[in-house]
Length: 324
Image 1 (cartoon, rainbow, N blue to C red):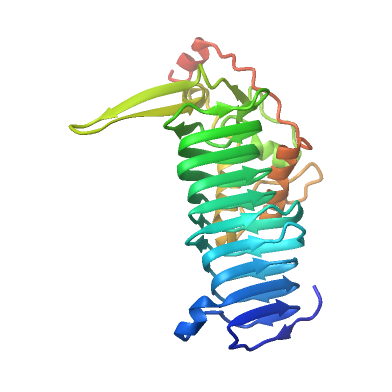
Image 2: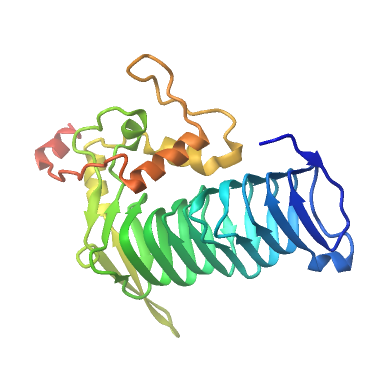
């Protein structure tokens, strides 16, 4: 990024290009509540942002404070470079990015009525009425009151009224939930990474024995629960591998260091001290940084890092021996 110029402003519409904003962009008068902000690229805003509409046309752009928009946060489909939001992002209406050639990163939660993201990394969770994700990684959960549409993405878990999935979906936690039965495009596969040795894969070391991804069957792995009270009856569907995870825990499988990776990613800007994953084969410390974790999960998503399927076999005598 080139040397940026500081800027002061009071216009109703703000355009930023190669600017460093040393502070927040917040309305001071009623007329500024309808202010539109356009970031044309190569811009850093160090404080919080409020806008009627916020458009980012190009990277490299970074907003280090919280963001709230009244109508829409929109990222141009032709945007390139790095676009980063360091803190939580909210909208009273929509957050949209269909950009295929930029690295879009949210270090915290997203909250909006409608969220559509392509090729994005979200360290927190997404809360919305409707969510559409394609080629995304969400370390937390995706929670939608109405619908979720997932295509080729890694997410922690999900919960929604209706869910549609396509291509490959990877879950980081043992269970996910929906009210209606999940709709799948033919050929779709769902994998659970609860028992994958992510720590070893991150270090480039061979994964632990009997670790790996679990392919889920949305028919046999569905657990239907009916919740009732005096007035309402609701059916909740849980898609879970928790039985397999519990069996593995009895065999002392909780040594994959997965929690280090997920916690380090979800801490975002609060990660002031790196977790220790030991040393590599050359005796060098293995760095655990946000950018490296982001790259690691996208390598899994794109197939650069191969996660083998778990064998899934264990002997009951091994379980009994652990209690002796």
